[in-house]
Length: 331
Image (cartoon, rainbow, N blue to C red):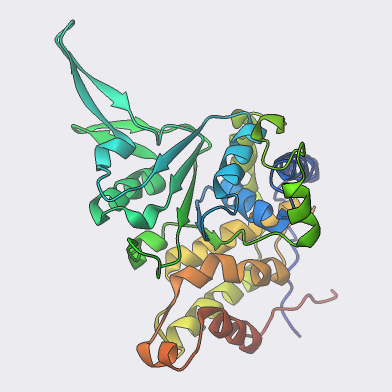
């Protein structure tokens, strides 16, 4: 007899699940006004948002990454800021700095662009390592510390970082420790034929961030995010997630498997996906659908595997296929 994956105790109320499912759909539809034909990517960004994580978009310039970040902020009714990462960008240009005011003889903190609900870190892999690392504390701790004084960023707080393909001139590979801070890595890619024609059509709404309505408030989003931690995750599901992580660590094609933080993030994102699907409990398909976007950037191929033509998506697919899936029992 296999283990049950459905809940037996109280978790998130059905009314909360229904309210979140409606809100999630409304935000996604609002963002789609400006970002055409990318519903799956939009939903992944929203998953990271409600899970309290951040997103790494790896794509070539001109595919709508800035439009996506600004549209999400507009739909949330919050503030958005953009930071263009360049080799000469300083950490204080990102986080802010203490400034002396000669009129009052006081030293006051001048907030940087990270103090917003949605922060677009554009072309993050063009900046030096010390500037990239300036994001680490604020992404993880949600505070900026200057002269020993912590300054909290707004809630909710989402960093959407874009990364050019690593073979482009002037780019630096992000270190594993920084990659692990991103809940999800995904890509927009080029739209299909009909959607790209709609984008090209003069007078259309594609790319018009000003047309994206505010369908909620940052406070409402923060409230839902906190409640979603109560979506039920049965022990067999947790064991399944742990076995997936252990399989990546044992795979000979990988020199680096998934960290415990990565597995915690997978569980958290699965909770959001379950509630967005109208369920107050997680099922194996929630984990399977998110394994690629959540775990793909957290594993590293060995040199031999990379030379042999393997890729992380193939390895994760093999791990998913080989790991036994918990099944519900009729009792």
